[in-house]
Length: 280
Image (cartoon, rainbow, N blue to C red):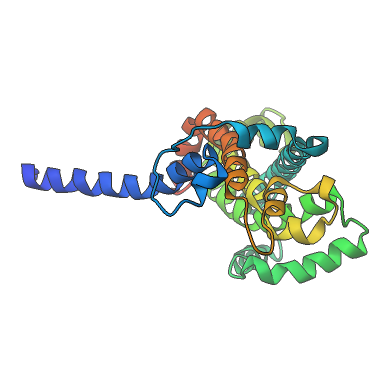
């Protein structure tokens, strides 16, 4: 029986949604507002939602600071995030496909081990990963950072993609094999195109993991020119003061690539998140 929503219920629902939207957006609004303020306005005791003296100087300083260091941090973050995304998606897709389609000794143990690794806080993994990266001679190296990020993002990516491959009818691949296609061919030409929404979600997750991460980058990189953006912004935090106007401007610039990536891939991300959660 259809339940008609009264005007009072509709008003309450809309009011609740507006309230949660304001609470969610306000920290980002305050961040953007602070990025356009003068230092004297940032530390003012009065609550100023909008900049009383609008200025672009914070952004100009970051983009033109000594030896274009901020732009170097941008390049480091882009390079590390893209490499992590590429390696993570490749390993997650092949592993998830194997776990979805084949039975082999240790399959259940592998899935269980992937699940267990997600139960540990990231801080616990720093010491063992640091020792591994150090023994490989990859400290202060993009490769070491990419390996650490891939290792932390891979278990969740494999579980997510396995669920998506499970929804793809196996009969399509059997028909392709009857026509003479190899196992790699059915994966590359049949399963992978059908799993593109799931791949998009995995790529977005891997990119975000590498783009926002701070602890591993701070531990593995000690040369200023090799810092990623989150670690680079830490240089504006001193013992007795913090340059919040520069930190806010840098945080806004860090957010922009993620927003652009999300807007461009939004359709794939939504379908991937919803379809991967069901099995036909």
